[in-house]
Length: 116
Length: 111
Image 1 (cartoon, rainbow over the protein chains, first blue to last red):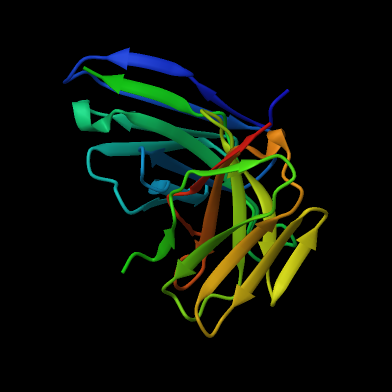
Image 2 (image 1 turned 90 degrees about the vertical axis):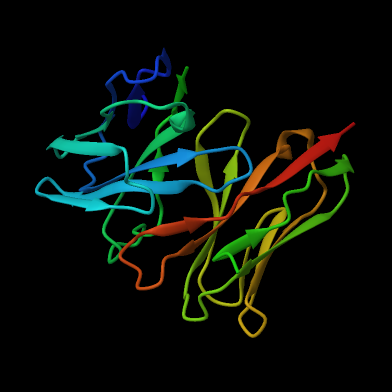
C-alpha cells in the first residue's frame, strides 16, 4: 500500500462548488504539505502543517483552506471553486529537518482537479 | 529573478548519450539542494541530494557550484526509462523544511 494517499484522484466540478481534497499518510510524519502544479510552473506551496495544532499559509493560500484532523490526515478545501484553480494537487509529508531524511518530501499520487 | 530557474527543455537524446541539466538558484545561503524526478502525470520522487560539492549515484552525478549559484545533473549512458521531468529543488530561505521547486527540465530518451 502507498504511504501517502490522496482522494479523489480526479475530480471535475463547476464554478462556485465547494470541494475537499483529502490526504492520508502511514509514514508517521508530523509535517504535511499541499502543493499545486500548473504546466510550466514549479510546484507551489498552498498550506503546510508541522503538527496537528499547526497550520501555516504558503505561497498561494488565497481561495483555499485546510484542516489537520489528525497526524495522518490533512485536507484541502476550495470553498468556492473557480476555473483558475484547475491544476494537479499534491500532498506531501516529511520528517523534521533535524532528522537524517528531514529534507526529503514524500508525495501522494496527486489529484487532478478541473473547474468548469 | 526566480528563486530556482531551469531550462524547460525538452532535451531529446538517443539511448546511450550523456546529458546535463543546469539549475540556477538565488538564495546564496542555501546549504542543501535536491533533484527530484517526475514521470508524466505522477508524483515527484527524490532522485539525489547534494550537501557539499557534489554527489554521484551510478549513472547520475550532481554537482554544485556555489560561486555561480548553480547545480547540475549529469546523466551518463541514458536509458529509455530516464525519460521524465527533472525538478531542481532548493530549501526556502530560512529553511524550516519548505522547498522551492523549479519548473523542471523535460528529458526524452529515444531508441
